[in-house]
Image (cartoon, rainbow, N blue to C red; front, side, top):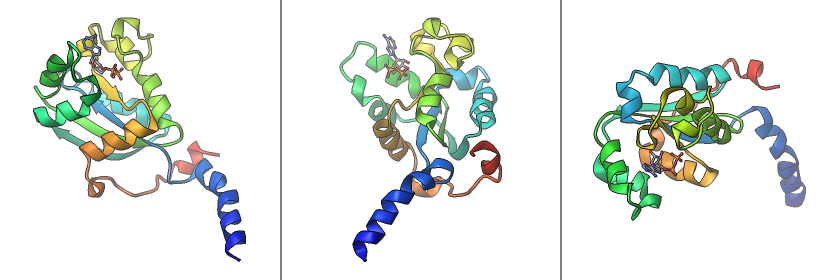
Length: 171
Ligand code: ADP
């Protein structure tokens, strides 16, 4: 019956999510300072070595409009104009990474907003000093990840595939 089918779907959903797609996705962006300082490969390496899957990547110089939309939640704050100008001042590397709890892990990799308060071993803790030159952005929630991925990528720019290493990363 329909009811049995619905119950079976609910019962199996957590199993399907444990080791296979669709998994959580996050938007990670290396800002112009990270690109100019040659940190692109180092940053990608951390996500890749962890076991996460790269599903989208591109290099672009964001327009002021795009940069402003990305940081819309900070509109009106004193640092907003400088932030938008800075983000649109050079090339960024925009990425979408996929995997279990990748949003939270991405934020852990990145560290605190202020690089001087970021622990050694984090990207900002290892490479940054000033808050306006903190190298990288990462989504901070499921909601912001969905909005940011939709803002920066067209659906066709995100690859659907399965890593053959998946069974060696997930149990
Ligand atoms: P995060 O990037 O860690 O999520 P926020 O969303 O609070 O941090 O801020 C967005 C970006 O705005 C920061 O990454 C930083 O580049 C910049 N920023 C935040 N606070 C300040 C500040 N007080 N002065 C200058 N720039 C700031």
